[in-house]
Length: 156
Length: 99
Image (spheres, each protein chain N blue to C red):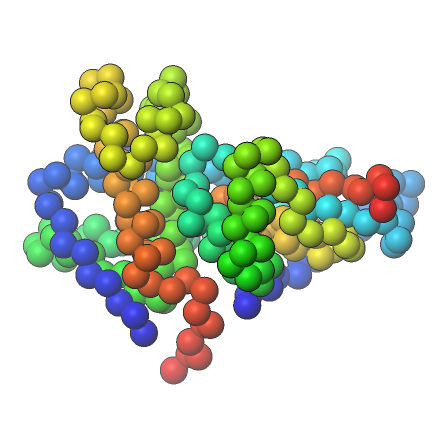
């Protein structure tokens, strides 16, 4: 099983966690992207959305779990092939939420520039922007160093 | 490969029930959030595409705004759309009028 340990600067990440938690709270009852079904069947649509929401919340709990007491003692988050799928999805969901809630009005080329200096962002949006970039970098590390396409390992 | 889970959906009203022969398309739309390598990984994971095929679809989404990823029965198309939405890709289920 592949495993990556990422050492982070606790004082730099702590403020980002406040944004992540606010984003997570905002996603408890709503999907990061609304589903559109060619269906007037409300029961079907509700079931569909509830299943998506349950998965989304589970993924986000997995991500929040990375930043518990252990993280605040050593600054390390550990990601492996067992949790990377959930974490990849959680990062995506939270980035949608952060974009929708805090980063409206920023140009696309800035949002897509992973090396964009934070000083190019209006001050009120810098913290959410840093969080948006942080989650993107977490995804990048997972995609580069873990193997989300590997077959699932059998349960022991 | 992980194939999207099969879901049980409520029976539609008879008057609006799709015909068995109907062909449904799974269409993915571009979004401003997900990085290209993530989209390629998801398409490979959900559909079992090889790297080149997944990349071609991803570029079509990026450049033309959408890509038709699959077409076939409604039940399987629904399963694919659900799986894509689990990964936070914007995906639509469309009846292929020409199909």
